[in-house]
Length: 231
Image 1 (cartoon, rainbow, N blue to C red):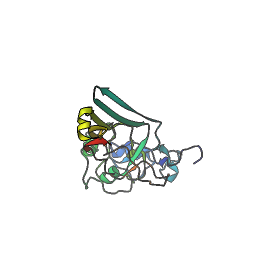
Image 2: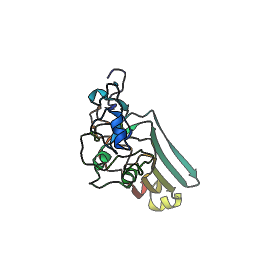
Image 3: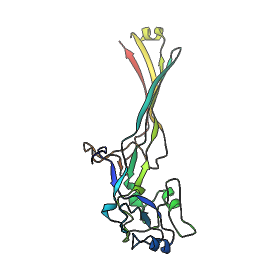
Image 4: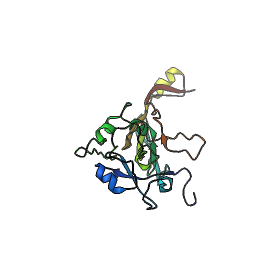
């Protein structure tokens, strides 16, 4: 698309949830909508929602990359800390689209935010997830902005504590130097993204399929311990 980055998300824009049948009927553009169904934006103002009402609804590309790597030294100890982060990118979380039917396993925040009645419209910082439904003519599961989540994050990727053993100990081992270390990777992720890991992408070498989360398994936290010897 001219003027847009490769791989932007293109679909309908969800602008709310109909709280009553009367509200859905008054909107008119979605004749099959009922209370608890998604309300989509009528982009071309022709009184009906169809494929012509799609627009760019987000981008998988971050506005900013950042990070730092610091080494703190005290006597024979070295502490290395590696961090990185991104801001401004969106992730299309298909995992939640599949769970919206209400009959499969659901994450707690989805059930808590689900529309139940006019008196219990449901909401969270991610918005309302509409009524529990497996199908329906309103096409609640259309490719739309309701599946997009802010995936900004800041990660502590690696922390390593090193201890340089005394020269006398190295001489005893008949080596030039000796260092032992203790490390942990994928320490913590600061993010509002509700999925397992905001740093996702199922596109592989395909640049048009970026930032799509099908329940990607998160990076495991790992611990390492060892000793380095220089001969």
